[in-house]
Length: 259
Image (cartoon, rainbow, N blue to C red; front, side, top):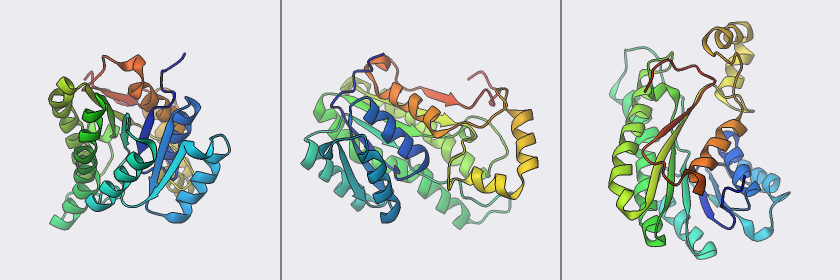
C-alpha cells in the first residue's frame, strides 16, 4: 500500500533510540525525509549511522537538543525549515515513564512528570502548528500511553499526564481542523527495546513480568517498536486523511474500556 509519504518532511522528537528511532526508520521506508532529535549526542549519532545505511545523505537531518525546551524546539524547527523548506508531519514522542509510585507524592514529583510529559508535548505542538498551517495542512501525532486511557499499574503522575495529553489532543484537533491540520495520538502498551524500562524490569524479575504479560495481554506477548511505528506512520499518511482527534491504542488487547 502506497501511503503517499514520498518526500514528506517528518519531524520526530525523541528519535535517537527505541520507539522514536523505529518511527524514523518506518518513515524512511516510505521515502519520507526525516528529522531525528535527541538529548544524547552519542545515541543520536548512532541512530544517524543506522538510518543512513538505507537513506540518502539529504534524507535525514539530526538535531541535538531537548524537545521539551522552548529554545531547543525553536532551533530544531528552524533547522528543519532551513534544510527541507517545510514540515508536513510532526511526531511528539516526548516524555518519560520514570516516576515515583504510590500516593505520597510531593509537588516536585508532580511538576517533574507534568513538565516532561504534558508541558513538553504541548510546547512542541504550539511551536510546530504555525509551520503546518502555513504549509496548508499536515499532521501532528502525540505519543501517549495506555496508562492515559485507563487505570493500570503505573505511577499516578505519569497516568495523569498522559491522560491530559490525550484530552488536549482532542481539543487541539477541533481547533486545528479548519486549518487542515490533523491531530491524533498513539497509546502503546508494553513495548520492549534495548535500553527501555521493560528490558530493565525483565532483567530484575523475569518470571513475574512474563506471567503478568501472559495474564494481562490477550495476545500474550510484548510489543515491539516497529509495531508502534506502523501506527504512527499510518496516522500521518493520506490513508488517514479523515482521522483526527483519535487515540489509536496499540497494546495487544490489554485495555478493557470501550472508549
